Length: 579
Image 1 (cartoon, rainbow, N blue to C red):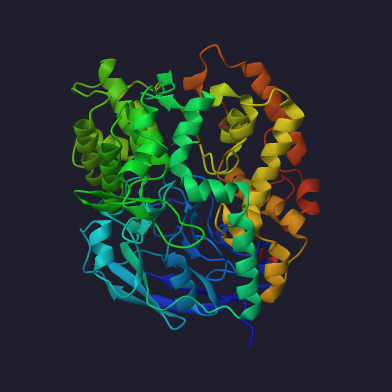
Image 2 (cartoon, rainbow, N blue to C red):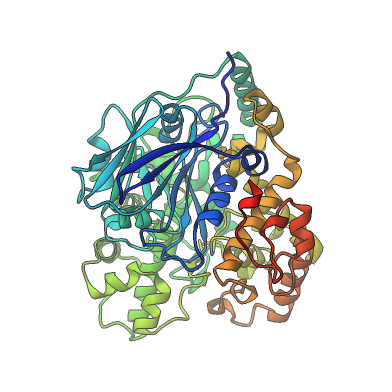
């Protein structure tokens, strides 16, 4: 018999220690698919506006897609929740072995929705299609130590940062080589006193049809431009690209460009790497040994902890990255927090000796942040904006919706500025990255800029609802794959747009509007034409079918099968009729 896509979901109430299984409405599966889309649908339905992200009523979802365990490349799961860092909807993704093991362990369930707060530290054990709540003996241990407690299973867990509810704590898997990184899903997990999710079964076995689809997509990807790039360089090469293109921020956003890129980029990685993350046609990242264990540094590691902190030693950067991984903190946010502290000290806001180029200063601050072990660490753990409010110095590190930007400097092109400003989870380069082409091409007018960003945001919303590999997903024919597992779907061309608009409605309900889709004030230094940016934002809203405040119009929502979310004021309402 051909595999069928999962059509149920598990609910876990940690307060009452209750586990239940229920069907996913077929309409939801058809309109929202899985992953980001399905997670957004549940979150919108079940969270009251203004709910405390670290309170018992917040929902934390571990959500798969209908094809999880079968797709080629690095499988993913989506961590879905309300972000404690930004207050927005949050979807954060991690790859590696855990997602496929979770798919095999959940059986006919597409995910787990967790609410409540346990009276003691617990873990969730997943096997044979069921979930049980068990005591967590590893509370207080880092992510690697926790993972190693379960040598015969795959683990997603938090480290000290999640336990201490650091607002940008991650959920780590595969001995901390993969993370659901941005936005603080790990803090939500810690607030629920949930230490780990342990998947005990093997991945699902594809039938001959799925096996052929996987082989064909793998071959297609391996021969593509992106596939060749990944097999030779992976994301570490992005630091070289950004520097060459003139868009690499460095020294805490004081400068653009880094003179020692060859010491922190792809050639440096190849020199010290012991191998690649996995064998086969899609090899993954570079493995690097450190004195604290093996790590797999990504592009953001070299950009944020290297150039961003003025550190020009790849092995030192790898150690800092591994410390972030073991603590369980988002290294982009952590690196920017350290850079903020150095600049604040330089300008007299902090009475502390800190400097760029010092790995030891960075290591000390990482420990303080991850454990909230000092007044400065406590402030930075709540986010850079909170630290700036407490100490002063708020014009140092740019952020959108309270999430600091990755190292692509948007002053180089208005297209990237708009991509950051309109990102649904705060400053993020993963929703759209037009900077990779716009800096080399002169004809990026407003129409082309907006079209590229809208198209990327929609396409990735669909891909993240399939929960496909970010890169290999480009080679997948979604309709063909969904047909193979019997999934009902509705006009895939509009699915990504529907999901993007649903998330926008969630954020609007939380109080976000045009004022939050702003170019970071820290970067307004004479190179940015604010009037031109506002005009570009107007063009984006028009193409999206949103009003001037940034709220989707009734006509837009009706065209996307979202009209049940609209009341007389174009706000969200009880949408049980959508079932």
